[in-house]
Length: 408
Length: 65
Ligand SMILES: Cc1cc2nc3c(=O)[nH]c(=O)nc-3n(C[C@H](O)[C@H](O)[C@H](O)COP(=O)(O)OP(=O)(O)OC[C@H]3O[C@@H](n4cnc5c(N)ncnc54)[C@H](O)[C@@H]3O)c2cc1C
Ligand code: SF4
Image 1 (cartoon, rainbow over the protein chains, first blue to last red):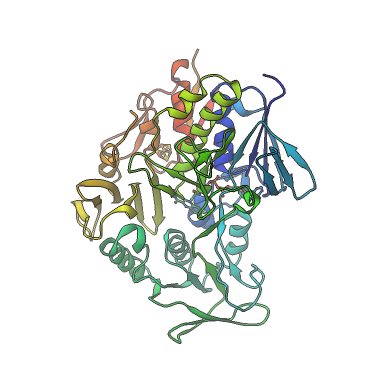
Image 2: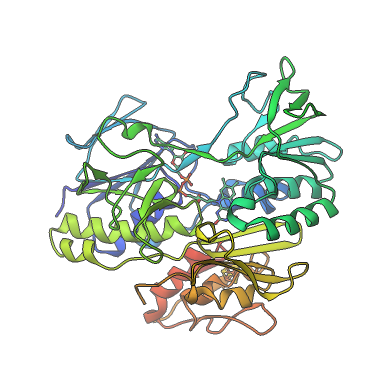
């Protein structure tokens, strides 16, 4: 079997777990992981939480690599520019072209930017995003006591940054087009309660409005909202969701509408048929999760890179060995998406897909909304998600009741 | 043969994910905090403990040996 090569593009958590998964399933050939960041894979969630007011050293955030993957070749600081899946070649921005026997696409997402004229989209111009360690280092420098911080977007990451910046002594305004922070995944009742808690800690929300203008020449001095409000600012954080890093896969006939559409074996789909020898993992993958239904969805949760990386490892190892491939592909597979968020003293823990719930399917299952509670999200009679505000042990007890697990 | 489980207690935030992956080794007590049941588990548990280390959101679990 010597002489085979697996090429993993994207050196984040999903790329790492796919490499480990290949080894765990007996693949002994070459594995090369190429990523455009300068760093070995590291943990992103702390970047908007504890690390943003603590230690932003890479060695504190780096993932442990399993001993079985110690012989993987890592190339950092190199970006894939184009893949030719028919010829099994990937071209990189340093001019190199690499062939492969199997390919793992693990390039994740990047922060979405507001397309509004104004100072350049750089940390020096005080316009920040938060996706990478370098982003967090740039942002942290501006989060000094008394700094005026405008967070654009009130999703999980926006709310975490708002909480962290407030804790660091900044004056924080959070702007979003939605009626409540985090309302899309959590529903209006819990979202309104979390808004109250943020406000109690000093965060000011501007909801149901957008951004009209960034004022300033070299750096942003004011953000003008669509309702005319003008917010003076030292630091702007754009936390407006993400864009998939899928451009390097253009031109292969794949469905790239929102990440890469795959089948349940994580093989990309072309003209309705799966492409063998290729797997898509992590934030980039739009895959059917049979725990809920056969609709393919992208899930930007930390648990997904590990689940999909292991699955891709099993499928590709069997493919490369020419042994047990049909069984590996057909194996029943589902995942329980798991997500947590820390904001001030609030620990949110979510299981499943709360966003799939009916508008009238959201009910408090335990506890009290104004204190600690577990909220259930239903689609018809089916529990599709649970979210705990505190009550970690109680919400953890609901894990097996979410969706219809198909594997034990 | 056995190996050693090392938890960085400064990092651990009692997420409890480890206890789902390897209940033989990690346990969430009644007060909600995590305790390590077996500090030097049998080799047969290695893969489960590695799974537990993988799913710890703050990467607080290390395996030695
Ligand atoms: C600030 C922040 C906080 C978060 N908090 C939570 C949380 O509390 N709970 C939770 O469940 N999830 C959280 N997440 C989400 C979680 O971190 C992601 O789901 C996870 O990192 C996805 O891993 P991935 O490997 O798929 O993608 P990434 O980690 O994005 O890895 C992809 C890698 O590929 C690289 N790349 C991109 N394009 C190319 C190319 N063309 N060539 C080569 N390399 C390329 C990227 O630079 C990156 O290094 C958070 C994310 C962020 C950014
Ligand atoms: S998963 Fe990590 S943080 Fe949670 S209890 Fe286990 S070691 Fe602690």
